[in-house]
Image (cartoon, rainbow, N blue to C red; front, side, top):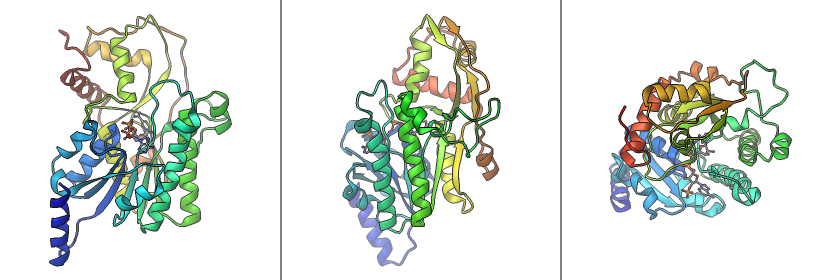
Length: 338
Ligand SMILES: NC(=O)c1ccc[n+]([C@@H]2O[C@H](COP(=O)([O-])OP(=O)(O)OC[C@H]3O[C@@H](n4cnc5c(N)ncnc54)[C@H](OP(=O)(O)O)[C@@H]3O)[C@@H](O)[C@H]2O)c1
């Protein structure tokens, strides 16, 4: 694949043809990144994807994407190895930094498992971008870097001015939130001091069909609701966005010259009980939680800034139907009658 890729680019340069725009996507084989790579390829971009192990079977879906043979090049790179990031970023006008650990359970050593790859990883990516004179960087953060501010007024939707309190994340041992808050803060600070054009996107829980074969953390959350038959579940408020709408959001902020700072990206807010009611009405025969306890109110975020930039999103029902259909097809969920 790389031979074809290199031959075509050598020919284009010799013939003085205008090259298509090159961009790099870090952690290209992940749930969200795969949809972004797919979107970029469909729009004619040449994509450099970084992977820790390009030969791992879990990344094989990338090579099967339309236009991958000619327009996708995969590089072996680790976020903690600065030198490994230079080759994939060299020659790119844009970089989408998505690679960051998303824990599946408890994190015994948060510094090593989460904070360092998120923070040092982001720093290494940004330094490589400066070295390569990259024009724009889009960093994938999370509403986890927005929502944990105890001082935000209740019943007021959180906007981009709201930042998670790092001390609160530490005392509550919310290491993932701390990793995303530290990494996003560093990215925006770096942009200011080093004159690099950096925009961040903060999505809520990302759901949707999988392009990769392995299960990821946020999709596992939806599966758990349908499979585990929990006796009781705390009725928390949760926010959701579709993986395909998120890919569009990242490309939108990349393409729009006026995009600046942070962008919250979330389509729907509902309690877990409401989510389960919705799922039950469409798929009554799964093993849903039996009872909900407690309840939260007044939590919300607003994506108005992103909507004003031109972002659109699909209905939640479409996300749920497409996700469940995909889990059934891939064998993550058995097909039931009704
Ligand atoms: N899914 C959500 O609900 C959600 C919500 C908000 C924000 N996000 C953010 O979205 C991004 C992608 O998450 P995802 O949901 O798509 O999860 P995912 O499928 O688990 O993807 C995470 C990616 O990060 C890579 N990675 C982790 N540590 C790395 C390291 N040290 N060096 C290089 N690559 C490393 C992983 O590579 P390997 O395959 O090699 O492990 C994987 O490709 C993350 O930044 C996450 O924080 C996700």
